[in-house]
Length: 410
Image 1 (cartoon, one colour):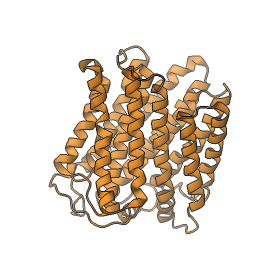
Image 2 (cartoon, rainbow, N blue to C red):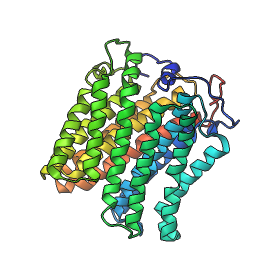
Image 3 (cartoon, rainbow, N blue to C red):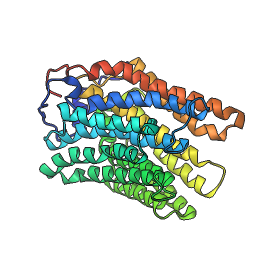
Image 4 (cartoon, rainbow, N blue to C red):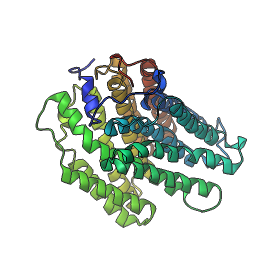
């Protein structure tokens, strides 16, 4: 274990205002949204990349609904990332509002809807084409209702943005399915890109709220702080990038917007205390994950105007890098904090953080390597990614299906 043990209350404070929200179920796995969804997300993350490599190398045939690259992108965003977002928001909104989202059988039913979408997208030939779309599109509206109702009841206007981001993800997913069904054309790639941008927007919103606090609580360095002005500017710049990526594609203007967004994303983190986090794995993984956002945006800008950097490197900096590291870090932190445990990173957990970071570095660098090294790089990156989430699954699944250590509900 590394660094000073951080009390579980630090995790609870990240979801302030905190007050006990009584669970309406006696089963630990369905007591809070993070429990089943983090198990599903980790299982999916560890297995879907293996399947993707088998598709990529011709061992397994791609789906007949989407082309292979679009299927891969779709499942990483609307399968994996959305599952982590669901687990986090279903838990956090209950704490923010003091009104429970869904627990018990309704929560398990929501998980079943997500799982049905993954089955439909993996073996679409079993279903009529229109049914595949209906099954996969069902989840996000239900998630929006589950988190929106408590926010409205509590008049928690500050977090209405979460419902807006879930709605944007639904629009992006709908565009992909409409393209697959032949209703519109040219929206598969743009829908996937919109999905990635929206997830990064959500991360950008949450990062400014909690990363400086997590770091200050862990390191006790009181100078660590956020800048509300830079936070707003960075989020606004990311929103502009999203608009240009999807609705107003222009290479040079888009590159300019991405460069500004990269600079602002980096600038807002200057006082977050990154250099103080070396001894605190549960904090440094968040800083490492966030660092991929300005890197990815800068690579995106370069890829728009030159051929020196392929677009896939920029995309994977944001996905394998930012989304990968930050989801793993937050899943670990939420699991520990919301099961009444100290926020300590075990050696296996630290190794999983190293694996997911290494996977991102190799995947981003892969297209820049000599051609003969490209496929081995994909294999190494994919294996490292899968190992990272398999470690989380085997380490924390027993925790997720067990009652809280302090005996309180949730």
